[in-house]
Length: 292
Image 1 (cartoon, helix red, strand yellow):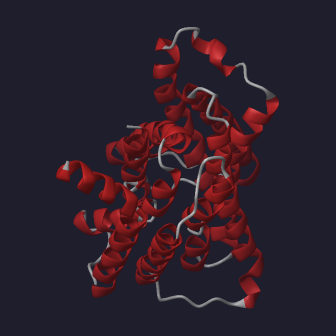
Image 2 (spheres, one colour):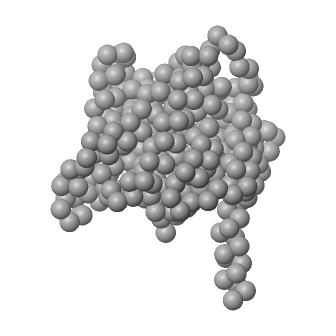
């Protein structure tokens, strides 16, 4: 069941690009501040129905460092990366985090890294390269954008580190993610006030997109992801995370925000195949149950 929660986060993240495209021209940190504020409200629901309520937020400093460092650190680094380097290359480098999760899981207690985990994640990375390259003019890494590439790589390390460390903090209730979202909203607001000019949504469609962003990819998704990486199959979730960019692009195509292409079809086959390869043990278990 926990792995299913993790999968639901991946499905919600697939709506991120579409909703962001429909949210208007709001600056990145302002959008993060507003959506994480909404996400905080979403995460407060399970927090308030839990026995003890807000007392669950009384966690040691290292728990807050991991949570806020993961949520705010990743987004701040990613936003900086796409400003310091072409978004196509920066996005691809940032999407190294699923592969890092799969490889890094070998360091976790009770986990064993198999060849199909690495192969599945690597195939997913190739498919993601096709997706991201298909959105722009292809991939063309240039030394002049090295600082941006390093920022994107650091963002990938931050998110992979957050996910793996969350596994080690399995005893910490997932409801505390609401506190992480609140802190991220406050830090994003400070960055917005320091570095950006405020741009408000201009219509009902933009406001609806922002609210949905906060409810799903930013709010419920982070709560579900926390449950998945703490109690589910983290290696399978890491490899399956490459489904997010392909599903995201398919959503853009379905709503007329992006064109369909053969490279997109090839990417879909690669990513799906990679995720299926990483899930090989699960298919074996299902087959054994069917035989018995």
